[in-house]
Image 1 (tube, rainbow, N blue to C red):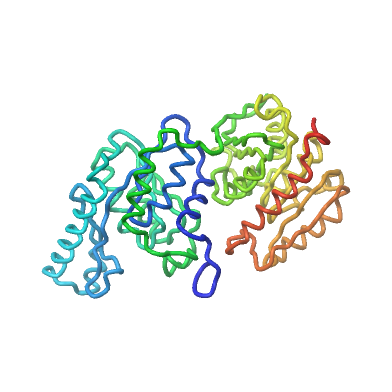
Image 2: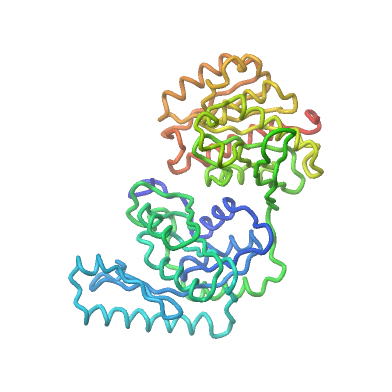
Length: 441
């Protein structure tokens, strides 16, 4: 993970916001109100607002800094008279009550000044009875976010979500006690600072915040970006399955995702790869192959025949949908989902190409010998066991097969830049092999 001497995950806050946009499905119905924590959260939230077509506002919060170390938070204050103080840290530091009172007063004075600056010429977006999404550039302790959550609830928000590019595990655990949902693109095992995750982490200026808020307020024809729809896939037998379908204009093919055990269609990794494919002009269908009840039985997670059958059923369903019925189909499988994708490819003539990421392709068994379409196997150099399994599968298949090894990547491709390489390789493979003029159904 990013730290001293290691490449950062995001170029700047705008880049982080675009990554968040790619990971968030377009809401069905009313969009949430995005509440950015100024100043750094605003340039992250702005591209998310553009993508979702959502209103953007700020939730003004000020950190209460430790004596002599103002960058170290011991609490936070927010609009509406909200105070959140970390009593455990305050006691550990031995901060006297009088000093603490002065620090809180100072933070509240700064809060009032920011409220005047950001609210003077622009009315706030009403959040009473609405779903709000709180966005910041990252969470180290989560103190300011807790204050923002409580302020949003105090203002009458119906539901409070928190989403950020990166957060410490401790912050996520803390916020899950406060918010309805907490998500982050990256939750490292150890996080020294938020800034280490950015190549450019220069302080956002107040003028930049004001400019972005004014642009968001003035943009009545906000671009919608890629249209993502939540759909239910129904089968002749079995329960309907939830899925997210995204169809860019002029799509040249459809890629159906088969995730591994312990993952889901809303996995940030799957959504990041899906966004790379969408930018390459490919429609994507991210679906859960099992219902929540079925997932509780671990036998279903490794029932490759069941999973492959549902992938094939999803392919048949796609052929009946007006937006995607003429598109050639590819399958993207990860971990156990890769085994299911290869079995489905062996029995479904509509599937024209497969990409596997860290796949348990050995689970396809004898079906490997019946796979006669282009297959790209992507593995990390730090995953030797899966590498050997993929080498064996490569030899067993009859079609065009390539084995791509990403240096220094582990099984989950969590290393900086690893997942981006997966997206690039997958997009190139599908674009090359899903060519409607030659391979249309």
